Image (cartoon, rainbow, N blue to C red; front, top):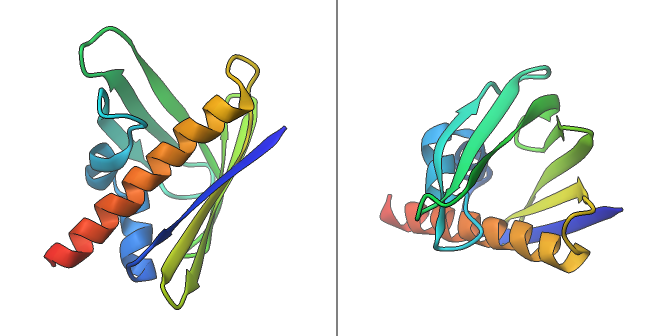
Length: 138
C-alpha cells in the first residue's frame, strides 16, 4: 500500500530544497513529536548516494536509524529513495503560495495506515514550520 502526505511551505524552492537535503537543517526539523529528535544526519545527494538520520526519544529509551539509498534526484523537483525493501518519492511543486512538498511512500505492516500517515505528516508539518521560521529570520 502507498501512503501520501503533503504540506505547503511559504518559501522559495531553493530554500525548501536546501532545508530538506542539508544535514544541519534535517536535525532541526526531522521529528514526529516533541519528545523525539534527530541527533545526526548524513546526506550524499546523488543517485546511488546514501542517507541516514538517527532518530531518538529524548529520554534515551529508544532510537533507530532511518537510512537508505537515493535512486533518482531531479534538483528542485523530485527525490526518489529506497529504504530497506520500501520506496519513497518526494515531489517539490512550486506554486503561487510557495512550494508543495508531497511524500509518497510504501507503508509497512507494523503500524496502521493512520499511524504511519500521522507520523510522516507530523514530520512534514515540522519541516514547513522550520523553513518558514528560517525564511522570516533571514
